[in-house]
Length: 485
Ligand code: BGC
Image (tube, rainbow, N blue to C red; front, side, top):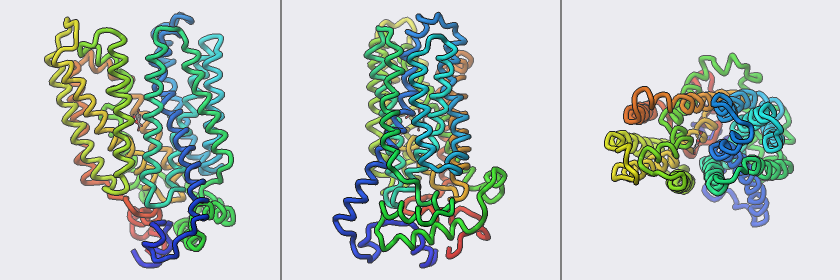
């Protein structure tokens, strides 16, 4: 990396470290204000993602009573959010590239609001299903646009934290959904459970409204003045022109990317990294546990619905939130790879133990047995290990590895693959358990953890502390590198 590309980079390591005059207090205050708002938008988008994913487990009972749902209808109502999200994620890349990241977030918020109202006021199952699809579509759009916005706006030395805070919000959303489900399980308040998500959706609309788009998107759209203004809100004034030149030189390599280019030879490396992480994040079993925790705890000897709900809420929901803080604290310090590898060791070992303890579970037991307790502890280790590694780091890396010109579309492909993998796992987990038994199913997840460990070791580069343009230079074939690298 030459000096000129260093200067061109959008790195905003603290001014002093770069030998520049430190920004005035007033400037710092100004940045902080906008960065906090961007942070809040990222958080709200993640909370909605998590809540909408988690809430259905508790809502299903009441719905089934009111509409006399068949099993097929129950499956449709549960899983079509994921399918909606899959399509939302695919379209989101194009929307985020054409209309901007901010507009895509606003659209997602509007869809959430409309979908939540449709669901909670639904007079019949048809409207309910449409509501689920609309919400899913919004979840998909937000799952692309929000981390993209965060990655493109955050100062380099905070980027990992910004994107991980999105994951933190997902975990908070899941936790809140578990608590709401737990609190309302015995009533039939499914309309309240689903309607509640309109509140953060409206807050997201309000919070995202005053934001500008990302400087990188404005530059891509040829709007340098807008890009400058957006950067001035969050950067030191004397650095802005350098940053703009850096973004421009990365963009100068060509026209707006086509879909063909997203799958072309030049992007093979970043695309395989992003898709690999997206698949491994799901095939190591996280959502089997998030969705079916109650059933797993029932098999492990937690007999009453209350016991199961409590075990799920605290040992899965709360641990998931708490352990995500480890990633936020260390992702920009230790780097992405060490967190991923440490997490995968914990996940692989704990899944192996869950598999073993299922061999010793006694179906007829009326209380949580020793094997049941071992299962619980191993699941806590699994969730904690996921929450500081594959959970947040996947989203961070997916949003860092692509060149500016193609980032929107390429991120949406990786995100859609993540949703597809989530759908596959949640759809077939119970079937797999019936077919090969729980022990072998958990060992299969453990095997995927081991493969992921080796693959990450060999294939995933460290992106900590590098500007997005530096990462672009590192991952493109040498003849494609931006000038000055
Ligand atoms: C995954 C979700 C998962 C969640 C659990 C996210 O990173 O993409 O599928 O439910 O983590 O915390």
